[in-house]
Structure formats: structure tokens, C-alpha cells
Image 1: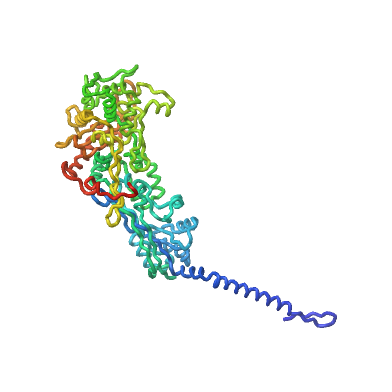
Image 2: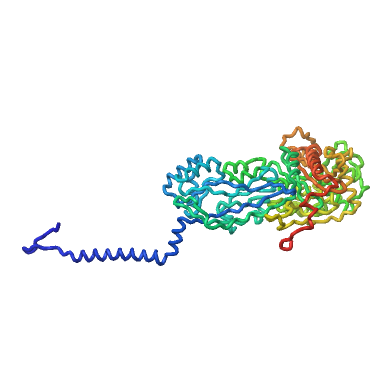
Length: 630
């Protein structure tokens, strides 16, 4: 209703034309803006908008590649890949977020779905990308999600290949484990996506490029709630290559069982080519736990375990070698022409040096003893004399030539070198001079000397082979899916010690007498019909006070000596060399020697002397396929 007013006695009517003009201009501006927006979307952005519309019904789904299988030397599967049913969610398909997540949590058994979705958003994952909500669904959970799909828009079941370690902890430190790729790895390694498996440790890490394969993809049509309707196109994935090991499953199982619940390690090598036949480290762990995804509590439990199950004692455990080191003294003395078969020393039960007596393990002594009997009876006084005459630097020089104090080069991460002391080493390490009395401890494998089980296994193999040391390796070849060889690993000589036939005879006579002579220290390793040669060792954990003799049974277990035994067999034609250490096991002859015997018995049951090796070992070493000139 118009409001009228009187002005100078006349009735005034308001003018509408300016208002109509302003309203018309405003409408034209709005319509112009709409027209410009429509032009921008339909003309300029026509292709992009079409792509966005298609994406509402067409999706690209990535197909992760299955990792290659891992076999033992007889082509028995150790590690395979099995399908895993995972629940995935595409955030942009959610209609009622709260209701969908509530339903999903109910069907998955109370998992914190909201937390995982929020984490994905915080990490900047696009809303069009699927987010894995729960892995390894049970069959009941799969059925629940499939039958309630209308209540779960955006949720689907994705089949993902997952790693399975068939024998659990068996050879876990060598095989390693896989885990989900992390942010740092994604930045460094192209071709990986969030959720992919990647080798984290051991063989799985070292041979990742062969094992991982190449992922494929599918172009699929989905309905309004994200359910797959049909596959429009597909680029299949390419599974990874298979890896054939030199490990023998039966021998590995025998070594694991022989070591039992003891902490320690066993390494078995073929001295003719450096192939690792078995490698055990106890205590161990189950790599399936890593493949499933460790919880924070599980990780803390493993890291805080005082037994250190993640440590690979075969290559990372460093121990004093004890009397096994006397073989190093013998090689050094023979090569320096300081020792020969007739060299003898008198052992009264100890040797005074300076103002201290360095005792022999045998209180009453060995009397006058020659070189071969000194090895057989493990006379400490004999080797105190050898060490005094050689000096620590000559011992160190020959120890390095025999492979100690440096990494063996086995393709496993974090291998330790151990310690071989010398005058320069002590000056560099402690800024102190070397005292001659310290050489006596070095000569019997005590003091600063520290070695790994793998290094001692190589010593046994090297002496058994007459001075030839091969590069240790545990992969025989890489195979394509059709069984053709991609790469074959040839035996490689790492070093040669110029031992004369006479010197080899002395070493073999002493080492074989350790097991087979009535005066030997390793009777428990003897096998009827098979000549076993070896050397025991007992490594002190706690240093005894001068003049004191502490009984082993009087010490708490954690302070008891480590027991060593190294061996090769048969004596004159060795096919296997073994080193075993039993932590806090006491004397090597009673703790480690029986374990090695059990392993050797199993080996000769599998590979009787005179029978050819199975396919995949020396028998076909010449039929190789080289890669890049290897």
C-alpha cells in the first residue's frame, strides 16, 4: 500500500522508475553471472566436467602384484602369497557418514573405523582414493559386508595378496619379513603406493627388486553406492620372480630342533662352493606377525625382550671363540715356519708370565705335548707358548687372512665384523700400548677377540678344503614364472691360504683326533662310519680372579661360559662344515658337539657319501644364465 504525503497542499506520488531500473540491472547481472558460469562449465571446462561425471561411475582400481615365492634347494615352498580380504572405503561415496561408519563398525566387530578414516584425511589422501579400513577379514565379516551393502555405501571388499611364512619362525632371520611401505620409503622409491608390501629385513629386503612384481589395474563401472557393476578394461599384474635358496628345509629343521630352546646359533656351509645349507639363530620370531601388521604393544614386547629375538646371532652375535681359535694359531705358526709336526712344549698345568700364572684347563697339565696332540687335547699352555713366539700382530695378520675381523660379505644387512686385536688396534681404540701378557689370552681366543658363528663356520670350511675359502651365499638362482633362469649365482673364491699338503695333514690329524681320539675333547660328535673333524671351544663370560677356579655349576646361568664346536665331514673329502655356539652352555664338548652331531647325522641321511647332489646345486652349476655380465 502506497504511502501518500502532502506537500504544499498537493498529494505526492512516489516515483518507481529508479527502483525498477535498479532491480532490472541487478537481475541482468545475476543472469549474466549464471550465463558466464554455464559457459565456463559447459564450453571451457567441458572435457574436465565430463571426466568428473564419468568418475562418478567409472573407477580405476589398482591390482597389487603378488610377490614371488621362495623355495629351498629342493624346490619346496618356504614363503608364498595368499589372498587376503580387506574392507576398503571410498570417502566421496559416503551419503550419511555417521550412519555408514556406525554400521561398518558393527559388522567388523567394533574396529575404530572413524580413526582410520581421519588418519587418511590427515595424510592428504584424496577422497576418491579407497582407504583400507581392516585387513584379513574373517569369512563371517566378508559375508556381513556383502549382504549389507546397501547400508554401507562406499564400502567394498578388496582381494589383496598377503605374505605367508609357511614354517613360521624357521629361518626367520635369513628370510626376513615384509611390512607396509612407510612415508619415507614412498618418497624415496617410485612405483609404490600406500598399503603396498615391501621387504623390510633379510632376503625379503635384499631381493626386493626381484620379488615385488609389477602392479596392474582395472577400469570398472560402479553404481551409486560404489558397488562394482562390470570391468571395462584390465591391465593384469605381473607377479614377482621366484627365489631358489641353497638352504635345505630338512637340514634347517634338524638344526632348529637340535639347538632346541638354547640361545645361540648354527651355520652349516658346503665347503666346496660356499653355499649356506642351514642358518639358525635362537631365540627367533614369527615373520607372519610382521606381515599381518604389528601392533604397538607387540613391537614394544619384541624390542624390550631381554633375549633379543630380532638379533641374527649367526652374523650379528660376536663371541670370544675360545679354543677354536687355536686353529688360527696353528695356521699362523705353520705358515711362519715357527711350528712343525715335531714342535713340542711342556705343560705342567700352567705358565707363569710376569707375576701371574696363566693356567691350562687341565689342572694337572698335559706333560710334554706335540702340535697334533696339543690340538686334540686343546692344551692351553702349548698355545700360550705359540702366541708368545708369534706376537699379537702376526696372529692378527693371519686371523685377517683367514677371514676374521672383517665382514664375510654375505648379502644380509648389519653383519658384524668381530674384533681381532693388534698393537695398532689397541692404540687406536683405547690410546694404550699393548702388553705382551695380553697376547697369551688372545692365543686361546679370549681377551679382546670376538668372532661371529658365520666366520667360524668359514674357518672350518677353509681348513677342510685345504685353504680355499668361498664367498658365503644362500641364493642359488632367480627364476621366472615359466621356470627359466633369470640369474644364477656362481661359486666365488674369496681367498686362498697357501697351505702345503704336510700342513693340511697336520691340521686334519689334529682336528679329526679331537673327535675320534681317546684323548679328544669332542667324543660326543663322533659318527660311526663318518670321519668328523672339529675343534671345541669354551668362551669365558666372566673373568676369573687370579688363582681362582670357579665351578660352572656354581655360577648363575647368565655368567656361565659359551660353548663352541666347529666341524667338517667327511675328514678328507668334506661336504659340510658347521659352527655352533650355545650361549651359557658351558664346555663346547658337552653342549655344542652333540648338537652338531645331530645335524651331521641328518645331513648324511639326506646326502649319503658317494651319491650325487639334487638338481639346483653343483650338478648344474655350469648351466647358468648370466645377467649384466655376472
